[in-house]
View 1 (spheres, rainbow, N blue to C red):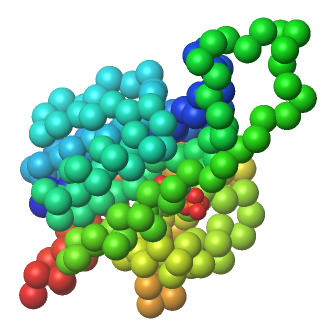
View 2: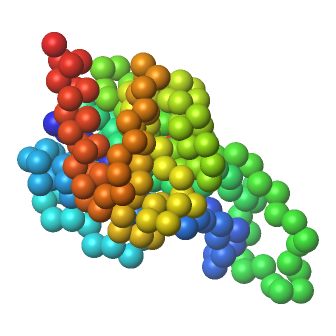
View 3: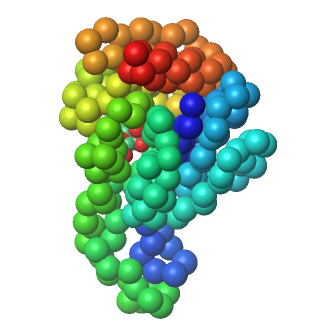
Length: 215
Ligand code: C5P
C-alpha cells in the first residue's frame, strides 16, 4: 500500500514572529507512519512543525508550515497514493493579513481578522477516485455524533473519533481512546491503547478497506 499520512499542527503567521496554532504534537500521525512502515508499506509523511524525529524507512518526509502548504504538499503526493490518513490538526482559520514586519507592542491591534482555511480533506475528496480516506475527529463532547457527521460531510471511509478532554486521550499523551466510526453507521469503541497500537489498528483498517475496493 502506498500510504500518505499527515501529522501535527499547522502554523498561521500573524507577523514574522507570531502565529496561531494548536496543541497537536504529531504523536498520533507519526505513530501511523511508523506502524505502516513496519507493516511493509510505502509511506509519505507530510508534517506540520513538531519536535519528533520522523520514523526510519519513510519513502518521503515533507515538512510544511501552514494549512495551505499542507494542502499543496498533499495534493502533489496524492496522485501516487492508495490511501490517505489525515491525522493533522489543521488550523481552521488564518489571519486575513500577514504583516511583513513584527507588529510593535504599541501598534498591536485589538483584534485580528481571520479568514477560513481550506478544508483539506473536502478539497482532496474531489480527486479521491478509488483511494481510501481516513479522517480524525477530535471533539470535546459527543465524539461519535460529531464524527458521523464529519464522515458524511467529507465522504470518508473511516473516522477515528476521540474526546480530547478524556485523561489518556488526545494531545501530547502516548495513549489514545478512540472510536472507529464507519459509513454504515456502526461505531467500534477501542479501549485505551498506546498510540502505536491505535496506529496499527488504523493501518489494518486501511489495508482491509483497500483490499475490499480492489475486488
Ligand atoms: O472538521 P474537523 O476539523 O473536526 O475534521 C477533522 C478532520 O478533517 C481531520 O482528519 C483533519 O485532519 C481534517 N481537516 C482538514 N482540513 C481542515 C480541517 C480539518 O482536512 N481545514
